[in-house]
Length: 236
Ligand SMILES: N[C@@H](CCC(=O)N[C@@H](CS)C(=O)NCC(=O)O)C(=O)O
Image (spheres, protein in one colour):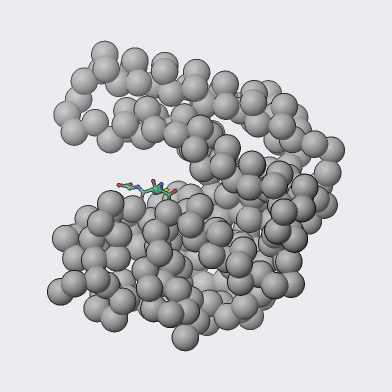
């Protein structure tokens, strides 16, 4: 069977893995999940007990969670090195470094901003504190990322890779949370413009938005969440 990526909307980081699957060029299916609705049904815990996206249903039918684990799985399937590099090469190490940074500190810096947005009850003082803390953390992580970016067209090694996919999924939260002008980080701005204009990222973003774009041909259609849980979920 083809692997199936369960990706979340709105504005999920998993969009970057959809783009990576396009770049990888091997047949895959998708399952589009409303993170504010159906993901919160108890049955979802059968594919991810932590109630998050993404989840990859592997070609063996096993649910695999956590972005870094999914990325490692895709890398292992990438014999032609379309989205990764030769294991143990300097480029592979550098790509993993970027992915680790993006998936941890960079993504985590946004959590206070999400928390401010999702407060269960109005609490203006706490909300303002969360926003102040979050904006500072996000700007600081952007400064660090700007310093890490080289002169190439992509994050590492002159081609788009899993690292660029992860960047595409999360970096757009800067605008979503109205933290700062992207032009404050010129290297990141140029890189993001390139990544976000890439056909695979445009395709993945359109799918996330509920449109029906034409991709590279590797995408073999969506499955409903209920079917994915019924066929591949753990337990009853
Ligand atoms: N450590 C996980 C984090 C995944 C994560 O936080 N996903 C978000 C969407 S980007 C989510 O599902 N959040 C749950 C929610 O919105 O309630 C990973 O890297 O895959």
